[in-house]
Image (cartoon, rainbow over all chains, first blue to last red; front, top):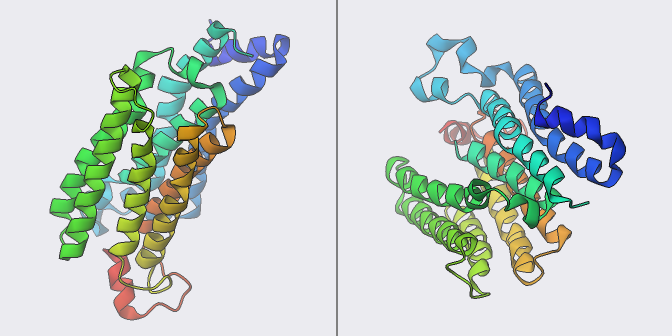
Length: 93
Length: 185
């Protein structure tokens, strides 16, 4: 069984104008995740978890690239999927 | 943490601009999410004002900030609920952005290239001051994609700048030693 994002992409071929909006909304989360991964790779020193002994509590609690990654996952999982479902249910082109 | 909050808001505003208000407001929690999140971030700003320390001007800037964020968040919660209907209530958002921008610029006493921290403060301040024009325009032309996307882009720039604030690297490699210490804070 396909999730809402998967169903939306399957229907994209039949509904071009709406598919652009769907694709744009569905791309936001993965793009944020990608940005987080690229940032972690480009600046591993921003991940204090890799060297926990050298950092205090707040540095370990707040890992910027991981937070960016989590924002992308949160948006895709909790906002984009419902939004795409509503976009198809609305009849807005 | 605030950078993360602004990134969430930016993603939501971008999605709202793409799908339009009709689709976005179909879900009650989505309708209240942006203003509610802004209100909670305003509450959190009181914690930053109290715990961050620093000078009186820092305290005043953060307290002003907290108040305008809560005002804008609360007003937009009222608008989303339908309790507030006067057409001037949406102007609380440009007010919040403008005042926040001036607070950023006002409590940074150093020049643009003094340190990474100073550079980020100036970028955030001017981004907010210029960004205030987008919700101002959207208050009078609510269907305009330009103003909506500009508003979302303001939060994207703000999130990127705030994430950079914690980076301890020098600005252009010629930062005075005192400034490096300031940037690490």
